[in-house]
Length: 503
Image (cartoon, rainbow, N blue to C red; front, top):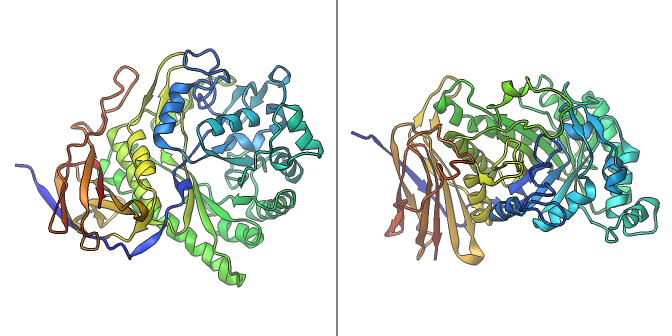
């Protein structure tokens, strides 16, 4: 006999967390593995356009509606000379790329990336190198990209065939500068001083830009929170966002504990908010520091195999995790966590977009397909625009080896008032029981269920592959219905659910 769990929710349109900044559904393209070469860019592919951009990949990105893409790294940026990637392709140097130990031919650079972002209708989130380089190179790149004309670097852009300034708004001040793996890693004091002076110079060139300063690489870093406090002490007045990065995995093959890791992400965000607000108080500032969660995903499947890869190859298949249903649920619960903190998390980047720990996979010279994690990411981006509401949830809980009081139900609601639409994203984390959820919708009188989308599979380890691309796909056979202002729906065991309502 199948066990059925029960949970309840209450929603009120006046109990709001915040308006969703669409950039919370951003992504990331780094010069790593086949993210660029063989991913978004593959001249000669049957689906490539005249620029070499794969249009089969573009169509899948269009399904998601990715609003912003971070580039060019990641660890890559800390050893990158941006000048190597502009100008005539025939004159660009091939160099050893030290972060990922590959050969970088620089066939794709700043202008190609910005032409591609225009094609996929995304903003660019550019990172500057504060590992091997610094203030001068950063301000020159801003001038090259954003100054209209009449200066050395803006005229060079025009000479390269790009007469219009790009007007890039969002810039990252390096990447994971606390990490010993990072080229040019720094202490918090050294990085904070450099980041602040770089920020000033970049804003002298273009006062309209906004800047993201590096937080800790992981919550487990030995200098965690001390790093944030020191860096913000230096930079608070001149930056606009503090970055967070995290990846989760299930190396122990403990699904219940794996899906409970959203509690770690929640604690991470709340702790960083506390540090930001401490520095705000210390400085008597009227500015509230916002967060950029600009690397997040599941990453663990390829950690060991990638260590055996021969160095100095061109675009080898690195970090090509093949994602399971349970990985999709983990991505879903991380999306829910980001939305619950939409009052402070304004930018987030699923790392990465194509081939490298990615929702979209390709075969070089062959087809593209959607991984399991594509679906919660796409659903959240398409249906999760609007105002996040407080969800008052009463649900049964479970304990794991690392966590206690883990709710079986993880859910959040987004209200699009101008369209009279309400979307509930919900996950049942139970391994063996369905979950009947009743949701009080008295403040949403007259709403009806449009559809109840479910992503599930009998095998939590099921994956999508090139030969079987539709093994794990969503269906719209969910049973959610409204009766007398009460929404009642069954969430199958280990399932991602999207319940869409409209007046």
